[in-house]
Length: 277
Image (cartoon, rainbow, N blue to C red; front, side, top):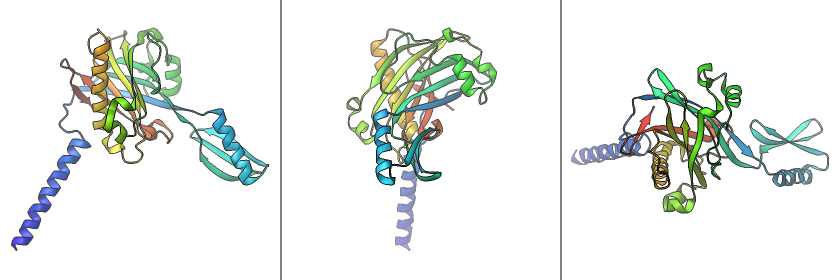
């Protein structure tokens, strides 16, 4: 009876520790919550080198004969090989994650007023002072069926990309190696329209499929905190009002939902973060 009771106590303690670990590492429960709302729309692109494509074509001809025809399809990125009318092989296209683009709209509940369009390549920072990339027209054409028309009622000159910083695996040390971190770019976007404000938006590229996804919230907070410190060290402007982290944890999959997770924050006056649900 005593042994059984001890086992129950141990089991309860283990369960409590597991719950605490999940709350801390997965749900990040201790992080403050902001009384804000946001909507966003994101798409991604993949670049494919011609040399890689040519090698894949030759490999299929070697495997299936000279009559094998290999074509590239982009949605999702894949190579389809046919002999005559028959599909003999289909596989993921060779290539690498290129960039993420879209917009965040944020504000008080019921008053989403500040808009932050972005186009960020995790491999390199964009030009300082860039405007109109992506353009309002592109955003409307790409996301017009997903978001209300009111979110596209602005001019290309209403938003400008300002200070950007890049991250490398070496900067993140041991943790970066565990995350298979490859590269990252974080940029401050200024909104000059209704309810002017600024937002730090980052795209971080890792290769954590399939284990990383449950931990993206905590990882993104860590990366965003580092980026805010880096921006503060290089920029005399006040800290941005908001921040967003797009963690590309599954770069070899297709579609924004399959490729990345986005987390949005309010940046408080003491430079701490509050999560925006």
